Amino acid sequence: MKLDVFCFPHAGGGAHQYHSWQNAFPEHINWSAIDRAGRYSRIGEVANASFNLIVDDLVEQIVARSVNTDFALFGHSMGGALAYEVTRELEKRGVFPKCLFVSSALCPSKREEGAYRYFDLEDDLFLEHLMSLSDGATTQNVEVLRAFLPDIRDEYRQYHEYAPKPGIVLKTPILALCGKSEYVNETMDSWKELTQCFHGVSRFSGGHFYWKNHFPKVAQIITQQILL
Image (cartoon, rainbow, N blue to C red):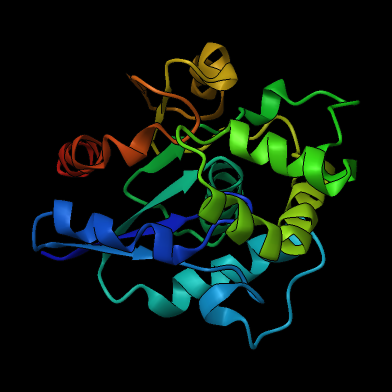
């Protein structure tokens, strides 16, 4: 039986950065990364003005694209928070993903008011912050980021304004992943508070984009989990 795994990229990220993961999955798993409206492959669409509107759009994208009976969701960083909220909305409709994989995403219960507003930084300082999240900074990377800086700022702002509703526990199983040297590492176990079935945290060497060096192993973990 075929199974879809829908991937939600990080803030400022695009589906193209995750397409190569398909090569690490067996044939019966269809890996499908989805761009947000107004970004990259969906540049001709109007971008959503808030985090909640992005969630609504992604729910409809899942409903439209899911051609197989079973599917799972994977989200990295902001994409992990989006995947969590999309799962909540799907469960309201009686639709239950096979599993939710949250990667390097701060648990909603650990969000605090007064978090640093990186999106308010001047361009050079904001770029410096973005590059600090990468394991290898190059001049080309900086120029690419600079070109998309307005979009990245906007998504940082939307994520900053995200206000999760407390007290809702998912029926969908959750498995968390992260880099050992990133700041969210210490809080990833808190995801167990938000599901009836928590499958723990898989930790990898590296920082926020740990998967750049580990995506075959990440794909293996995802495959093993959804075959349970």
